[in-house]
Amino acid sequence: ALKRLDEAMARKKADRDIAMLHFLRGDVLARIGRPEEAESEFRREIELFPEDPPAYKSLTLLLVVDGRVAEATQLIRQLIKESPTPPSYLAVCEVLKTVGDANGVRYWARQGLMRYPGHPELRRLAS
Image (cartoon, rainbow, N blue to C red; front, side, top):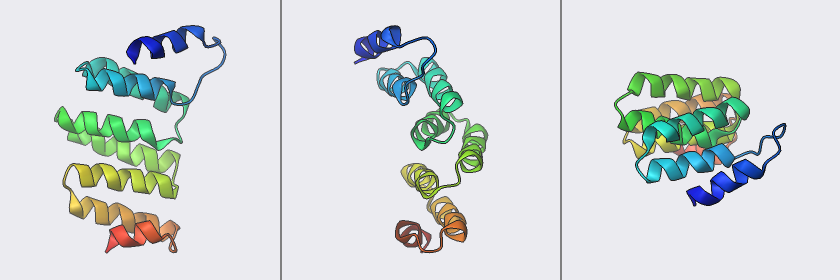
């Protein structure tokens, strides 16, 4: 998979970024035990596409696993600032659920409900 992603990166036009390419490369790197390179790829994806939640989710988990909880918290806040949308709030909730933070899930679901009071999934997570 990494070879194919590297080939895709080599073929892309220099002036055109492709959404999810750095994210996918970061995901593969994380899975094969190369977290520093994965972090770099996730950060590049966030830099290029700051409103897309997937790279934030993966980078947040990577940071938590590495014991960098304060950085992970800042990253969550950055996502919500850049893209205060239901998918962003749900991404934050998913990450917090994964790390076992039920209170954090409820908090962020409630924050999302303040902006999107009719959103059924946020409502379910907030209770």
